[in-house]
Length: 223
Image (cartoon, rainbow, N blue to C red; front, side, top):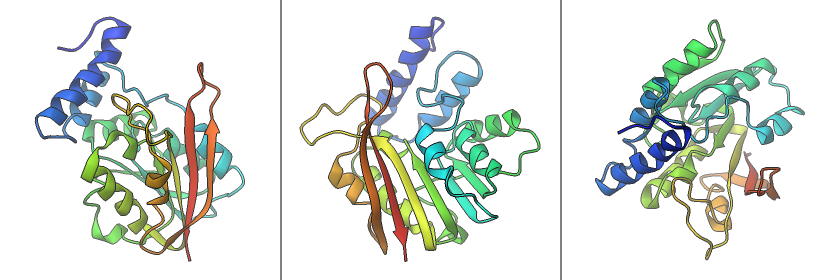
């Protein structure tokens, strides 16, 4: 059952994720979560309705100039729209069709090409097709083999000479795993450097939340 109070709407995401993971359907909770959020009965924990500040910082020095960018797990579309405003030719996708439709409604007339797709099985034509691939907070909600596959898959979308930007919560190996978001360890961040990608810069930062949250901001390149 979805919630009526703010606290219940936020807790619904945690219950939904746990139920689907326990039933062997670890990706099945995204669509009902976005559907419930559209009805005002749930809150998508990562949907802040503004572009991610680390993406804003990174992209501010790198105008698109018509180059191709791909936003993984685009949610409500804020990161994709920010890049489009800087001149990137943006494709943005989410595994939830409801999220994709919500993004289209929020930004009518947008140049962003929104699509429903799965990072674990992306369209073949996306392989090494993008000058910039942005992965923010998607991998951290996956578990086990799915997480490993998603890390490898993100890199396959980066074109020669292109960049992969990853933002994720950070933890040490012995730290608590978390409930929905399971922060990435340094070895998991390093695993993005595969299939011809090399690390350019990996930052270990604390944000300005209360209390501060530790995050990775990592850039990888394909030569």
